[in-house]
Length: 445
Image 1: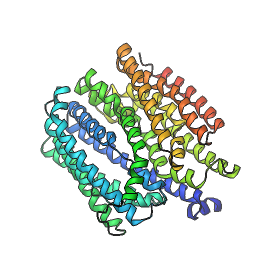
Image 2: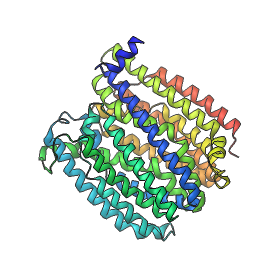
Image 3: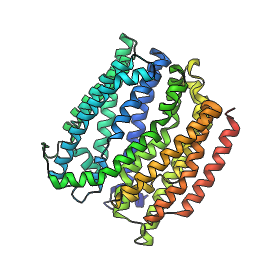
Image 4: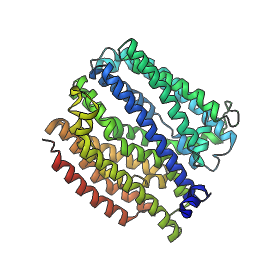
């Protein structure tokens, strides 16, 4: 007990990671809890096709964001100048410019996207949600600066607070006027509240626009590969919606989106923890330097993998029962989809921390090239599957692609001397057994 108390209260990398992971995990669970509450209430006030349309809006917003992302967060977290006010102010200036560009691009794309998906309402919805993107650019980099030192509490408070206010707003709007506009304006409200809370609880040094050429050079030099990675990451994260938007009805797309929201919770939680803690871990405790460092990182990775794999297994086994308990009969098909998506996410657990090691070493090129390859292989598997066997085939194809691409992740880990073969063997074997059990209990065909 004393040892754990020392871990949680100390200043060592292990203590800071444990605290950061705990706060990040609790915050993410709280945020997803709010989203689930919102989901349960709003699905009773709105029709399934409203969630299908909103999935397309979200997909377009994420596409614009990720296709032009310079990776300002990892840049601040890994840079030696990450504590320099000039560097932070320049990063904020770049962020303001990027968010203005996002807003303009979304407004220009609204009509063409509406025509492509034959959903006229998108032409009005996308510009409204774009307002929230514009406002979000006002959040100062004090948040990223705190994360650099694994102080994730303020970031969690900002996210939870903005989500809560937006949830109350959307429910009230949908109660008075049951329409998709409740979801759209909720995004704008969330952005406004996020800016307000961030300035209230993380005042830090006063930020003002600045253009330091050396800082811009470093940000762009590091971010050019992040840009490539983010563009490919969009295909990984949203490629399913791009494809299914043409193959499924808006109602079925809405049901799929709800299933994905529930099934993706474990991996999204893991990515949240990795994003807020693993770059500092690999930066301050490189595994190749000493056996003690290797053992420390192995314990952290194995603990996270066991936690995530257990949650994925629970979601896959209980998916149909969970949907029957939480939703009405209109959403019953989401249960089987949850089980399939859970199986598709199992291979992602094996190498989920390795890209952070490369970023910690200042290598944004390696993870970016890997993400491009993963995007190509995964979308190929998804397209082949949907053509051969519809939605179940698409998800199975996605799972097969993820298993194949783990070889590429291992290659990246070997290059940075962080590969842990025993971890991957144990977690991979458990994942295969778990997939067989889930598919045996909930066959897709």
